[in-house]
Length: 120
Length: 157
Image (cartoon, rainbow over all chains, first blue to last red; front, top):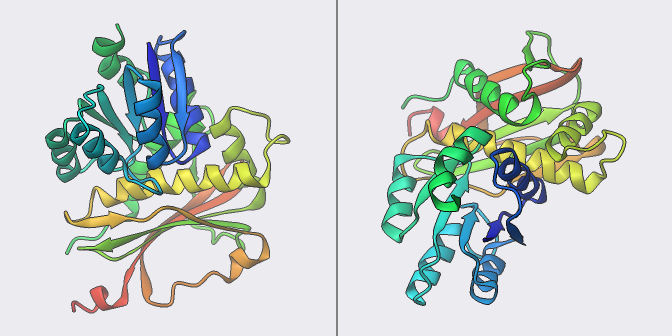
């Protein structure tokens, strides 16, 4: 499967990549986006099977990316990996069509539990 | 309005250390009452909206290097200034995001801001007062985390 990792922090993209491996999801094709605009454009051009997106990013926030994709008819499975996990944001994420919201700091166990049903 | 406390910062910091900086649980962050020396690196995120203030982390130079190396999974002699800015910025973003979850709905978190070098010691927050602080050491290097709120909010305006 192809997974798009969107986060403006290179450190966090690396941590997400490492955590995917630790959670047993090795061997997937990973694509990285460094801001929201890039995440949106790469989702359209690269057609990933899953998008793991930060919320707070320059250019477009994660929720803006998700809304723009859905408005454009792109129904890729989309989940947030964000430091902000308030009920308000979880609700916004769900309403916009996100499958899940993983809160930072996360562990490999969290990734395994949440992503297992999607990545198999 | 309830503000975050040092105990909240301690709980959040423990989670962050166990997830990213000390996954084996062998090098925990050790709180200490000793005042940290003038910082070499400051990382901050601001909160605006329903609650206004800043979440600030300060590091000794070595603490910033060690934190960045641990987050990146590389040797501490390999990290570059850009790595440090990215890593400590992300660290304060994660801690700030968790602090924000304790604040009223309608609060917004900014992107991180990082100052390094001699300027870090001159950083000021003129419109804010400190509401809580956690300070201590990690691998014998000083790190402090503080939460500041708008002076006008502190006056009950």
